Structures are given as C-alpha cells and as structure tokens.
Length: 354
Image 1 (cartoon, rainbow, N blue to C red):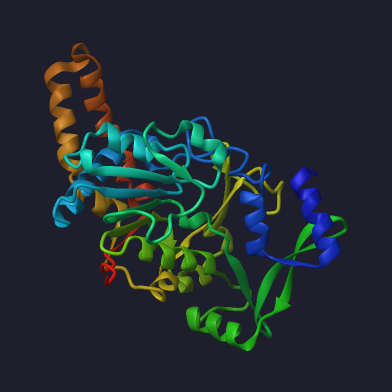
Image 2 (cartoon, rainbow, N blue to C red; image 1 turned 60 degrees about the horizontal axis):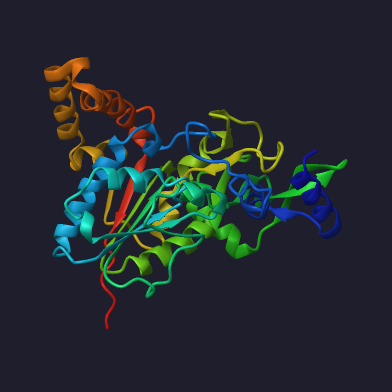
C-alpha cells in the first residue's frame, strides 16, 4: 500500500467516507503525492500524449487561430494567452515556434498546478498554479484549455432502486472501497433532470469544479475568447453506458485499473459533460477537433509540408523531414476514432462594462 493510500485509509477510518470528488482531488493533486504533483502527465516520457505532444503541427494550427482572433480584436498591441493545464508547456512552445503574425503581441501565462513541470516551460512566460484574476491582466485575453477539464474532480451519483445516491469512498477491511450515501432532494432532482431515463445501476458525474472553473475563465476572457478542447458528451449519454467508458485511468501510455488502485500513481479522467457547462453559459460554437483544425488551416499546412517533401526529399534536410512529419501528425490529429473526435467548445464573452 502506497503512502497516499495509507493516508487516505487513515483519514477515512477516522472521519468517515469522502465524496469521489475529494478522493480524486487527493489522488491527482495531493502535495508531493498526487499524480500531477509527482510529475505525471503528458509527454512521450510520461504517461500519455495530448495533441501538442504528437508534434508541432497542432500548435502551428492554434497559432493561426490566435492570428485570426487577434485580427478580430483589432490587432491589439498585447494579447494575453492563458494556457490552462499547460503540463510541460508543449502547446505554448509549439505556438511560439510557429511564429504567428501576432507573435510580438502575445504574452503567455501557463497555468499548471504541478509545479514540478514548470522547469520545462518555455523562457519568457509566466508560470502559476491557478488562473489569473479577472483584472490581473491588461488587455484582451484568450484562454486555451486543452484536456484540462477532464482532470477536474467530479462527484459521482448512481441511480439505485430507491432513487439517486452519491457514490462515496469508504474503508472496508483496511482498503478503499465504494459505498453510497443519500442525496438531498434538490440534488436528486438535479440528477433526474440531467439523466431522466437512467436505469437502475446507471452512474453520472456532477462536475461542480468544472462549472466554477468555467465561470472564472469566462470572467477572465471577457472581451476575448475561451476555447476548451476535451473528451466530452452529455450527462444522459454517460448514464446510458458503462461508467468506465467515461471515467478512466491512464498510466505509462496505457489504460490503468480502477480509480482506487494505487492512488497517486495514475491519472483519473472524466469526460466533460457539455450540458452541465451549458448551464453556466452555452458555448458560442461547438465542433470536433478535426473541424476546428480544418477551419484554421491544417490542410494548408499539410499541403505545404507535402510540397516541400516532394520537392526536396531526404536531401532537403530538416525542413523536408518536418514537412513530411506534418502528414503523419495530421492523420493522428484528425483521426475520427481518436483526437479528431474531441469536442471543441468556444466562448466569446462580452467585454466588461467600465
């Protein structure tokens, strides 16, 4: 039994069961022991790949998107880019490497709770563990959250024969185990409204942390833009399938076991409930990652890379090899059975009144 598991068992034995959201928060973010605080996360030498780690193409397309939003905002002298859930900094690094037209105006803030990853952030950025306050940054702000919200803690509810109940984490025979506790009538009503056709045994997440994050991010991005890219579906869709289809663990580039196996040693991720976010503010636009990337020029970048490769081949050096790699990167990024199917949610919150 690992140190974090021992601490959790002792805590629960002394104080009683805890919600899954509290358990997940400890498993991912406990100082020195949680998955992200220990240095787990995205990267070829870590636990999983997100789109920026596939190669530089994703960041190059996001750079083109930033140019378009910069143009829409009237090309301000400063445009803050908040890379939320930045991990090792791959997205910002590849945006910078793409040298967008707006480069001189871009000021990057990388938000990453796992401070152990700050050492790999690019030079010239601000690294911090939480979102800036709404008035901390001067000028318009673009907030980018690539595969962040799926890591925010979620509460779990299960439809039982007696109605909806909360799934909690207890201790049985000295080990972590699931149990149930009653919900308040208003909470039961909320669950029933989100998944009215749920069968007995169905589960759903309640994503209060994501809702709070969205409120803060919308406030921060007032007059700018907020873009969330993630695994996503509706609450009702989650109720209709096995919970392990939307609540998953990852470690060492593979699926892990149950969320209670060796807490702190694997990522715990949950699909983002689009309908729950819409209760805070409906998005301006919803698309797949493939649609978003195509709207911002991925096909042009791939065609450019293919032309360089066809013209120069291996004798063309690094430029030709980079051009060839765009083709294989695009195949992965646009894959309808993989990252291409991710959901992209966009908001353009109005500027604050002075």
